[in-house]
Image (cartoon, rainbow, N blue to C red; front, top):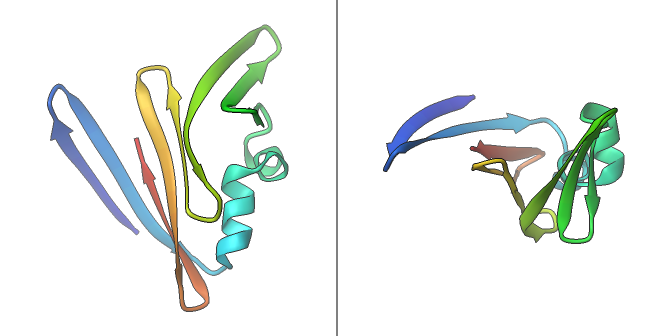
Length: 99
């Protein structure tokens, strides 16, 4: 795992890169589909060009900025841009998270 924090203008960019022992398709399904969200973040789902975060008395609509299947998902959460970028390695997937 590689972690870095860089100052950009008046904000910070957190980047975490790590490899997982699974296929690109399995990683994508977990990180960017409703069935995957249900396994690790059940309050989150995709609706059209929005990501919806919903709890009992709270709902937030987040703009889906990028959605390239098996490659990258990026969305706006409050004032931050959150993204997951995936790359296929031999029998592994490299996942890069940025916020």
